[in-house]
Length: 240
View 1 (cartoon, rainbow, N blue to C red):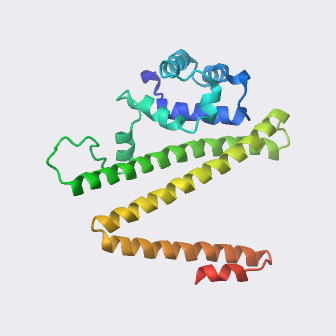
View 2: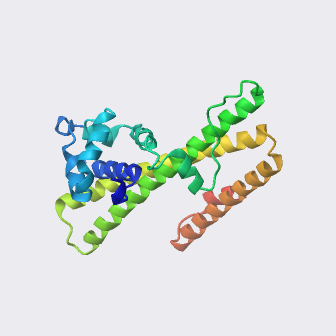
View 3: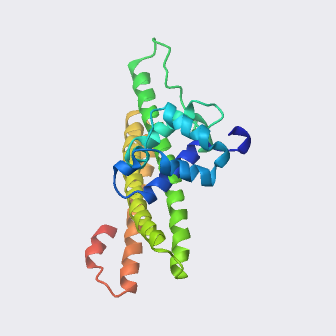
């Protein structure tokens, strides 16, 4: 796998994206890895057996689990972290230009304040990682939607492809909801960190920027509604 430049984590994310687009509901039909194997044969034939072995070695035996287990992305992260040559939390955070702190605190003499700060930092870093992985998944989903949409616009889309497009649209909406939820949690953790550990000036500027962003978004909606002759009075209160 190494010489073929395969990124195991991204490969597993793409596999999940494919299965989500193909499977609508849990079924005994998918209590195996048949769809996964078909995908890997098409995309990574030279690495199919190794990837299947990796999944099974970590207790992942069915397409159902990959498609519907909400924790599977975290499981993929654990799997990928086992090999230094594959993506892990530290390398990802470096790509984001963030210095990851060591989560194992060996110095028992540290104060409770430092321990609490380290704990909150690790929680923030974990949220950033989850955001990055979900954005990567969303990108893959949207690429698939774009591919099917082109076929649809050209009126050459097949019935099964049209069905997959509908499934992808629903999955993409859920991905946006997940990213929004993670972002809200990240903002909450960030403001708590600033407030608790002395970032008062940064917190003030950050909150003001949030208010500015809120007004800017509201203005975009007002302009959009006006363009189509819709009522904007109920929106105006949010721009104040």
